[in-house]
Length: 384
Image (cartoon, rainbow, N blue to C red; front, top):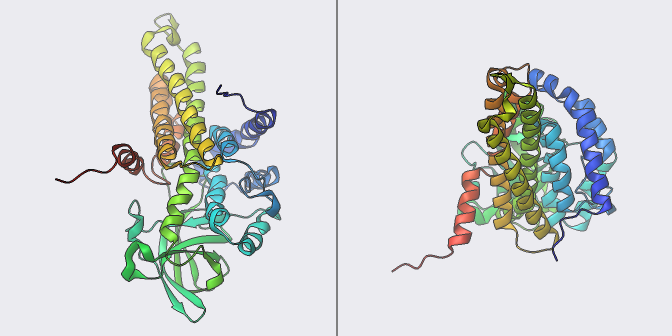
């Protein structure tokens, strides 16, 4: 028999994450969104609670959480503030390729320090001309003796301006196309790294998103993840593992929207009665509640597949796109229920709409997720 009951430990983790989101994140979410300031005080408390290293194995000082447990806390943290959630989970994204493909010495050297003090890491893949088309990256890693010299730039990098460690994807054999892409672990203090523009974003303004330039950045070969030319595979395997958490964030944001919609519709009176009694409003709420349940189950299955060591690419793509599309849909429906008030910054709804949009874009746009799903479901096409 299949059981959807969380263990006592998982329930405790869920409650802890929810309490943190309610006490530390929500009261400051509007301020950090409005000012577009990095929430250092909240992140210090997040570090102390273990949220900045939750997927790092126990032997390296982290929380050692499973992917299902990561999904559980992601939902709660995104319920608190999607921007702050993104800052925390960007660490997990950057750690994932090291956890999956790193040598023992690499894990000890680069993961352990993050358990000692509040620090951030960045996953450096996206470029101006290489977003969805990962194989088109132009950053080059030229072999020079026992080192590699990296030249190029990355954009839209979460935590880029505050990170102490970067996982950088560069092409070490451009003539081989995507088969030359290689992943490097690059400490921030390495000479030749410059932080460029810090982006002024529509939503998730509490997270730091920056452009990074690499000019003759010398990296020892021992900092290569996996082997030369394995970078594209590493990037794809990393996303397979982390996309469920993005779907979970979508569930958390949608849940926040639903709660606001219910509370408001029960107190807003029009034509002599609460608007919750109107079918047009009630059916919106019914749809949101149903889709939240469906999205959560998709997320949990995808995370369970990862934890079980099974193929998860299809399910991770489904969880990511369905959960993040739901976040957009639910926040817009809630804004409609609030009417003119929902459009005003005095209320939290317009922030939910702005925050939700980015979930549909990062870690692979939802169009890319549908492409992944369609290819998997349709299978090979026989040419006549």
